[in-house]
Length: 395
Length: 157
Image 1 (cartoon, rainbow over the protein chains, first blue to last red):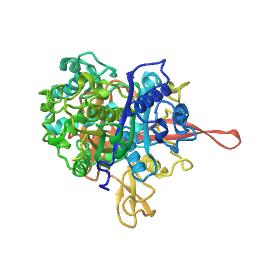
Image 2: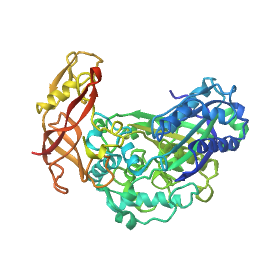
Image 3: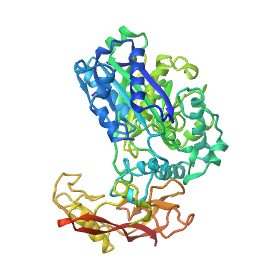
């Protein structure tokens, strides 16, 4: 279980801008991202033995094309690629794609593995269609959908409980959105780049108490890809391979009401496992790519991963510690709150961003000297807690 | 049939499960619900009471399960009032709560017959059962049968 440390590395990344691009077919997003990742890695595409597309939610037809090897054909890997299959666990897919790629490489079943995501949630569904999709996707048909429960209501309930238990203020919650936006202002691939203030967040309309519109992610079209290979091969390709150092995860529930503690989930256990495998502690982390979707999850993440004490994350973010120039850069692409929610791609974008920061390719938002990054991800109605630690050195 | 669903994607966006014996493994749940009882499955072998109702005991994997009653009164733990962006066929405000059922389990439910701002943590609530849109099911020789359905929510006790 502990043998993954430093054995595989991300060597190439690709991403297209998130937003509303009706003219951009999702296959274009997938292929453009994959192409960038291959070029970025500097490998011959024939070294890719496995292509792992994660699922697209907007269309079963498109998703079936991904399952049926369309990316392999588009990239000219027919007759060369050994496998193409889907790895999908909603928002946490990125972590499972990386783990699966690592497993294939370590077992000698693949030399390099291409992980790809693309979706069209921005222009592929109508406004009401998006609401309806997220009133059913990952929500129990028998036990929760009949209440008219939607992700805003779920995040509302969780935020309400978190505020009740920790005394976090509305301003502190709003400051998480501001922190994300400050990063997005520096991210050309982000959907929302206009400066945002705490007052604007608090003046936005109420979605589901106490959650406001600007505290909700926005659905977007997008695509991203990362290329994984063995550590040995990676060292020949680059002097900054992004090694997989440690990972930890727990699946906690299907129906959210069965989660024993919906203000903690299993982040602490998952993080303990990941830190232990990596041989690192929270103090060693230079960049924290914490899965957002709603601000409360970043606060929970900061606390459960050991960056803040319980109940202190709100003040920590409010004070600017997670902003550009702060002591713990967090969710440096702007997250789903600002870069946009592309489905499973919200997590893939964070994995790609962590690799980008460690590779030193983050442009204006580069965290100088970043060596170690943590990525968190979760799928469905926060059904699982995944923590992945990446680094340019093997501690 | 709910007017808003007509001509739209009524089948995919039907928010309620089919409840008849022919379509649903846990049809007794809905039959009991019609009697005002909230039930779930318990394992005859190890005694584990699970919720939602299961077909296999999640503790010992036994299939030897029985239906048992749950409390129909509980206490509100958390409330959220959904003001915009509710799924098709629902009206705002939609009030949701996490409810503690006598310490036996917590579940989400909608809370009805309450105005916005009236429901608070600690309030006592009780089960309420109401009919929902029946669904047409094709029978033999082209006959179309309407399946009656119910669902539950909670209201202030």
